[in-house]
Image 1 (cartoon, rainbow, N blue to C red):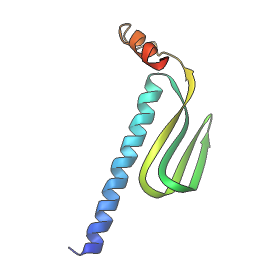
Image 2 (image 1 turned 90 degrees about the horizontal axis):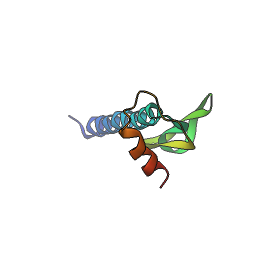
Image 3 (image 1 turned 120 degrees about the vertical axis):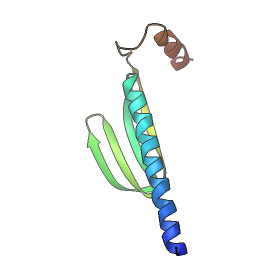
Length: 94
């Protein structure tokens, strides 16, 4: 296998792993009721920006990282167990 193909394969694997990681953070926040303001895939200047309701999805040029920006509002979901909610509330407001 040539070095160029190997480097491209590594970059693609890192990008896919990062994509799954960032979207799992957004999903976890959404499941517990946190407001999602922005999901960024990659670093650097924005290549594509999609506005969806109160959130925006940014696709950036350097695909080796990402972030999820949560808002200040937090609403507990009714399906969470009662013992789980107070611990989240204490951590969230500390």
